[in-house]
Length: 163
Image 1 (spheres, rainbow, N blue to C red):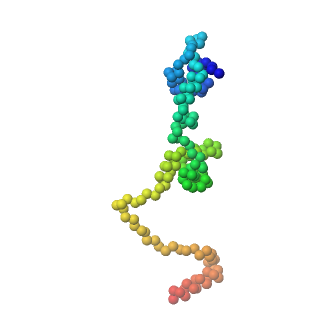
Image 2: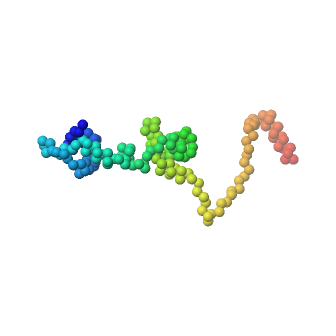
Image 3: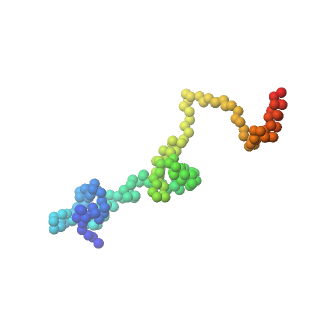
């Protein structure tokens, strides 16, 4: 089924952007002219030209290195669970595109996240200094009323130890 198209018919039929339509006129040779003198292009020639032009771009003109990753692929790449990868993508830690319920990200965005979260070693000219910390209060889990019998017992015990 080889139909003939004028330039405007080819643009509307194939839904071509304007800059591609200009390339079409220079790349595809018209077969004949119609009554008005407009060049006519053969459908097979248009198909061949478009498939050759977009052969390297499997995703509607996107570059191959711009492949979007799913949550499962992100989890496998980061070696974490599915839910952990999804959570990081949902709360914005990993840059993500959300389309409805689908989340997609790119490998370079994951690498940027990992690079930002990587702990960097101290420069050799800096010496680490350990901070001296005071003794922490340990919570024993007991809650006593200030005027209660248990509180009085502990206060009396503390006074006897001081003497």
